[in-house]
Picture 1 (cartoon, helix red, strand yellow):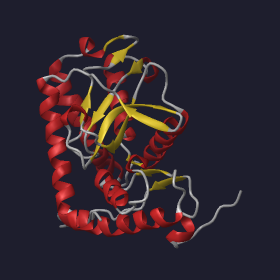
Picture 2 (picture 1 turned 45 degrees about the vertical axis):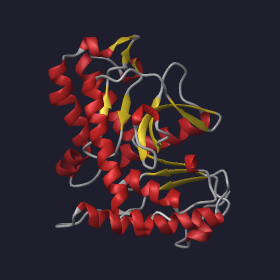
Picture 3 (picture 1 turned 120 degrees about the vertical axis):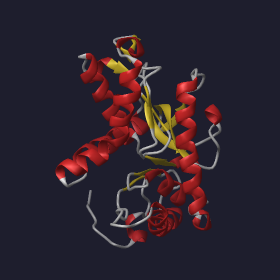
Picture 4 (picture 1 turned 45 degrees about the horizontal axis):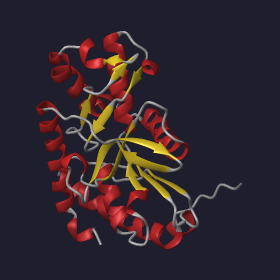
Amino acid sequence: HDVVSTTDAAVAFKDADYAILVGAKPRGPGMERKDLLLENAKIFSAQGKAINNHASQEIRVLVVGNPANTNALIAQKNAPDLSPVNFTAMTRLDHNRAMTQLAAKTGSHVSQIRKMTIWGNHSATQYPDIFHCQIDGEPAREKVDMAWVSDEFIPTVQQRGAAIIKARGLSSAASAASAAIDHMHDWILGSPDGDWVSMAVPSNGSYGVAEGIIYSFPVTCANGEYQIVGGLDINDFSRQRMDQTEAELREERDDVKDLLS
């Protein structure tokens, strides 16, 4: 096998079966979120076109570069010959962080935790949901109080990326790389039995989430395919937060609508 370094997207994506899209323009001083979206839309529309024209028809695409959900949507919409479900964005880093926070709070190991969920956008509106989560087969919700969930757990997971940048002056590149490996591994080789993972995927209307956005859901994976977990009870606490992050994604989509073709 050879390793090819290139700045030519046609060469990079030729017959590719897997693509991890990491490069994105970072937010600069005084830059509004809409400006960031538009700058990245130019990058990911070009990559979507190149993937459409040169990659394998069965390519699996993971977008890591932020704003990841909407960047993935832009790439997907610019690859009309490919299946929309082949485009995903990464919320596995948030998923892993949420598991770590819950393990630390309860004195557990992350290997004992199952069925963590990240809903929505990879942003400060994401909703880490423990209402279906289990620790050693027992409901995680019974091991923590709601004040901790609402006042500490959720904000910590939502703001963890910003906190790391503030502390280190750098983003969490190593943990993001590890999460990207986790995402692709489970997508291609299957998620663990009796568990699910979080992936941002094209909404199919599940849980009332609008179609036409890429939204993080709990999914199970097998044989290179993912399936959104169905039938989960959603309480009012969760519904409000799921709706909030959906609204942000719909707003992002509308901000770049001219590039979704």
